[in-house]
Length: 255
Image 1 (cartoon, rainbow, N blue to C red):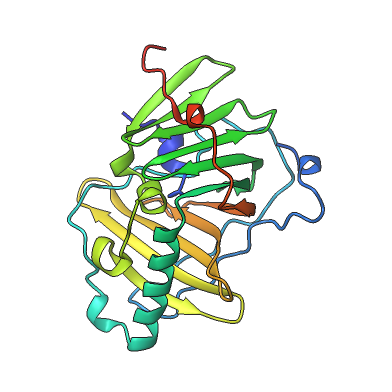
Image 2 (cartoon, rainbow, N blue to C red; image 1 turned 135 degrees about the horizontal axis):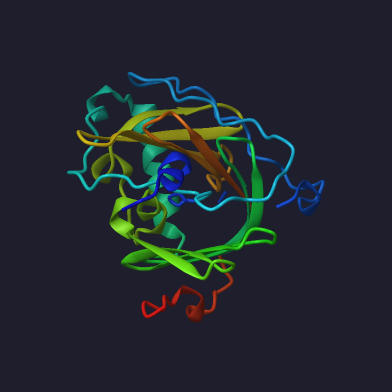
């Protein structure tokens, strides 16, 4: 079972934030407050504002458990040609990226910041390695996600299919066909896509992904849990050419 701390703060799809304030260089942008969605029936809440840095706590992860429901956007018929074109462009970008390495900054519901580096290898593999003092590593090996606490020597396992990371790690994705998109909008800075999943027992989870309006590069995502708590991950220094070490994605199930 997932603990209350993990449910409250969700690591994203991801997504995939993607530590002390001094550890964040001055030229590293902090996560941008997510804009309210301009289309769709519900407006997405803004990202949590950053507070003075504090040590990361267990359960401070860039994802939440989503349900495993039938795909397909119930709002698809409401999107105009421009919105569909934006979704196609984002889908093509996500599908084209097969490997990626970079850095991330994560801001949780209480404003705590942590940072680190990440590596992606599709399909289904990612590693988030948090910088000290956070003891957390998150690894997906294609089927499972493990959240490992190095200081406590504990490991919690979750199905990859039940986290929003599956959207970022899919070998190929068509957002209109494969997800429940509730809104898509753009301005001079970002293209913003909001995906929502509602489960009878757990409530509604929301994933907001933001992409550069000029080159469609992933910039950040925000996961909102059923209690309305946001965890935002901003990514930077992205490299889609470098091939990560395959050993980064190995999960030792015996520990």
